[in-house]
Image (cartoon, rainbow, N blue to C red):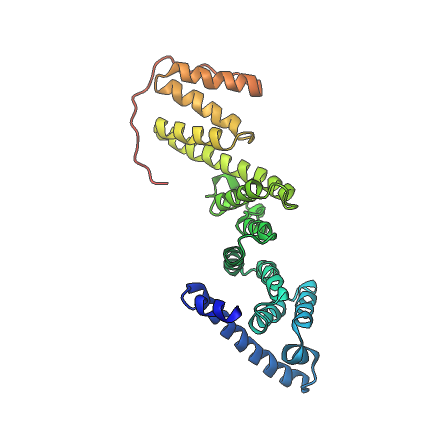
Length: 287
C-alpha cells in the first residue's frame, strides 16, 4: 500500500516538494551531527543518539521538549527528521501539525502557511484541519502596533490593511466549516478587531474621495463598509459619509435614509445638508 502511494505521488508536484524537504532535513541532520561532535566532543550526545537510533516516539518527544523550551529551530529539525524517517507513522502526522506552530513561533510565516495548506490538502477529513485554519489566521492577523508605531502615534486606520482581509476571511472560514471548534471563540474575537480595522480603513478612503469631490466613489466605499462589516463602531462614520455624499449629488431621499439609520441606531442627528447639489466630477484615482 505504501509502495503504491509512493508511485502515485511521483506525478504530484507535492511529491517533489516533500523530497526537497527530506533532502533539506538530511542536510540539517548532517550539520547537527557535525556541530555536536565539535561542541560536545562525544558521539554519545543524547541528541545524536535520538537522531540516529531512536524510534518515532522518542524523536517526537525530543521535538516537543524543544518546543516547550522555545527552541523552535531544533524542534523543526527533529520533526523534519521524524517525517523523513517515519513518513507513515501517526507521530509524523502529528509532527506536521506541530511544525506549523514551530514555524509560526520561529517567525517563519510563509513556511507556516505552506505547512498548514499542505496538511489540509493531504488530510482533508482530518479532525485537526480546524487547527490549520486557525494557525493560518494567526499568521495573517494584523497585530497591535509595535513600539515604533505607538511612539510615533501612527493612525492604524490610515494604514493599508495588507493581510487583515486574509485573516478575517480565514477566521470566517473556520467559523463556517467548524462551528464547534475550540478555536471559534478566539477567532470570533479576532474577527471583531479585524472588522473594526477594515471598516475604519474604508472610511479613511471614503474621506479621501470626499475631499476630492469624487462623491460616488466615496458612497461606494461607505456602502461597502456598512454591508460587509455590520456592528463595527466605524459604521457610524460610514453613515455620516453616505448622508453627506448623497445630499451633495442631489439624492435627498437616500441621504434621508442614511440619516434615519443614524438617528435610530446611534441617536445622532446629522447637520443640515446642502440645499443644492454640486457638479459631479468623478476622479480616476488609483488606490
